[in-house]
Image 1 (tube, rainbow, N blue to C red):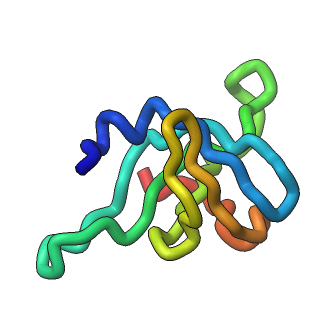
Image 2: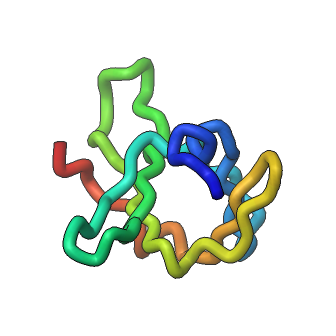
Length: 87
């Protein structure tokens, strides 16, 4: 068993291109089904923290291929899952 707090300390690595996306900052839950729908990872940094949109990766749970001791391996097209933050 693993807690979400433990998952936040594992780096997200995309196996498609080897890119390091960062760390989970949030999750999207399905309360009726009692499961995690997506994990949220902050997107590329803004220039000096002020220029650019507030982007994030919303990665569906089924795109997670392996959860290891230190990393989480995913398989996505990053452009498809990068979106403007809803919050």
